[in-house]
Image (cartoon, rainbow, N blue to C red; front, top):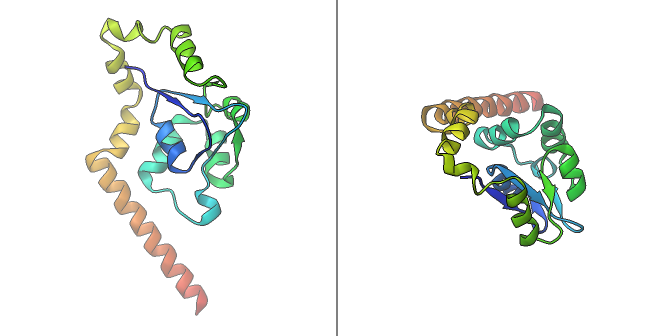
Length: 155
């Protein structure tokens, strides 16, 4: 079935990440911002976290979100492709979005889930089971090497 994240206020860090796991995102308006602010307080994006953004955003939007920690207003998020539409009226706008896109009827054909599985197969492989274990191992090794490099730099 289709999933929709109705963002009705500030959507930062993990909240933005959770919203990216949905098929559609409806941005707050006129108040509320979206921001992946990990870079601003020194938290790395672990492989599964980065994978969701990498697969769901354009390279330019991903760079801006991840490396700049830019705070997007609702309209800016729609323009950047982070959100699909604005929802100044909350649930009423979400219901109108569902109706406009015919999202209640399309899953009835029985292939919606199959199409989504194929669409996101690379993402699912990367964040599931052996794929995630390999990515976590690579990430941990990269972090260890970076820590060694920094320590050597102090000497």
